[in-house]
Length: 474
Ligand SMILES: Nc1ncnc2c1ncn2[C@@H]1O[C@H](COP(=O)(O)OP(=O)(O)OP(=O)(O)O)[C@@H](O)[C@H]1O
Ligand SMILES: [Mg+2]
Image 1 (cartoon, helix red, strand yellow):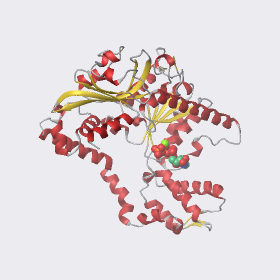
Image 2: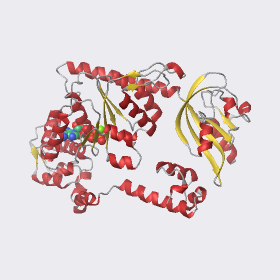
Image 3: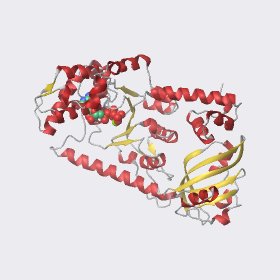
Image 4: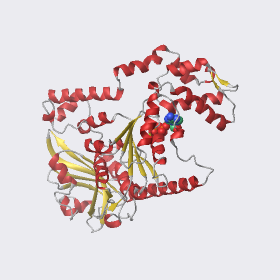
């Protein structure tokens, strides 16, 4: 099969729609998505200008015009417009400039019907609502008060942890936003729930949403809700802000929130009102926002993964949970706590760990923090049959590196150099990109060749590092 035919077959079978234009936004290729939302046949669309096919778009609102002007891709943009048949539609589009020899020769757009996304977002919000109601009903039932954590559930006697608990108790009743930072498994969610439960908002909803788990367009309608006004298929639906009214909304991994959504979140924090996606009206909400990151927020701001303005707004109350390797005094009480927990769960009667294990646990680097410690204890308790846990009960994978001195001390070294592999690699990548662009005298095609990567990959990386113009590179 020849290459052109193969490409045609792939395109025709894609779910997404594809439009290609020349540099004046005149259509040269047109393929409807599986749901036919464009409302026009390909043979008719070809040769027409994009604004003729979508009559209510203007040069200011059209993604094609914007990308042709800026020469920069516009990824996952939500558009609401009238299609050729006069029907209101909403799509999520990625629009990419076609650049040859440093000159824009055209533009292509991949677009998807958003109706399915809207359905999904509705389902997520409904599930959150049901979950809240379930927890709420269970809480009033005295038998099951374990649904949420309180400060009593936070185990540890190290000075760092005790001070943090004290600070968290002090700010529990305030409505100011909270930003919490800690490595994975340090207990961020535990703290957030404890704060909510110690506040006057405890009888009101506590809604947690992970920002990394969902694509941003879906997250937007989940957080802010949707309005039937300008969406095909979308109903009037509240988002999590409205659902959490009077209570707390916990935004986990806030740095994964797309920058546009971060701006929207900032507006809610500043004005105390939300606007559903597609709606004109705003609604007042009283929600305490708590957000978490597992990377240093200052670094996130530097890397432009967290908007500076949002950072300052969230940073009103800042809590930092130290990693377990910096509070090894907590290991003993945590081990006792987990032994107690798994004695109950596994029907065992274990009273402690051998001295040998104590040493091993103290020497380890604990990259997964308390979560990892819990897993180690849970696993060992499954194998232990006496009254104590011995080194043999600890699973092989874990024990082997622990007995190797180099690994045991790796934690200290990594800390001394403040090493973060991802950041080191990114720093090196950025240097190479800059070097190649300089060597290619600003010609991206040449630079991509020097780097032996596709040009689009280079464009994506330029975007990631926020290099807007080649002349930005010194
Ligand atoms: N001080 C503590 N006392 C008792 N249990 C703890 C403590 N800290 C953490 N845990 C337990 O460790 C596990 C991980 O905690 P949590 O989910 O709050 O961490 P996290 O910081 O949100 O992690 P991630 O960044 O991976 O989401 C949970 O099971 C939690 O109950
Ligand atoms: Mg968490």
